[in-house]
Length: 336
Image (cartoon, rainbow, N blue to C red):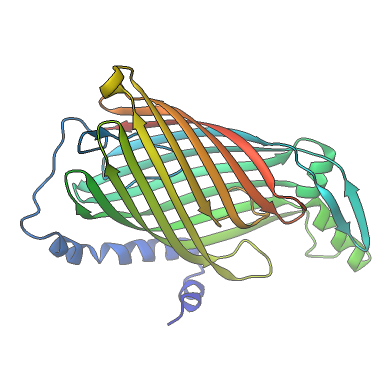
């Protein structure tokens, strides 16, 4: 049974596919309970914020982390491209030179994780994002896109010591892209000799994907913590020429908590991530590289909040050079 057959057989209705996969994950829970072993009792800590060993971990927009806590997350971000050279775009047989233009990106995320057991968490995430050209040139070349995202799944603790933890996740990502493709619309009019049925300026692309990931954390000491994550998934493609494709992601964050040694409740995180999921930009292709700098407050027992500064390098279909944009994200995580 191939992954393509599985996805297509559940393609309509799409919500049935979502429920079916989550239900399938739920059927694995008895086996997971046995895998934990009878001697694996509950693990407790002084406060609900994630800790391993002596280290208090912050959270970032870059990686989710392996921690199973009942928590509510909210993220709001905005970014803009820097030094974008749009090059040329093809309209029919004519290549049009566009010297410059900028793009603005926005995103908002609301997530909830419920700790069913100390080793098992159920997660929900709602998100939205958009991309908009700030000038006529960038509107023509890249158009406008809006993405809505919903994912649901399970997170299971696979192994833990006093200062290390490994968890595995299985979830379904369901998203919809609304794309205003002005350059493609004009190109099809020229090719067809006029406006034909089916040639629309605005199109909607649904993308349903099943994902699995492995998450690791290590509390080196009270100052330093390490978080790493790898993901692999298979699902529908946002590209018109492909019906489905594989998705992957790999990231690492080094987390510093200055509070224990300086009595200053400030955390700093440095990280990087490589992934090929289109996120809020359906015209992206290949791998996206991200660098992160985060500054956060670490003085509360049930709240992580801070500011994430990210730089991303993206290959866009209509752009000759790799796009770089920088974003600022406000990130709040409340632990119950």
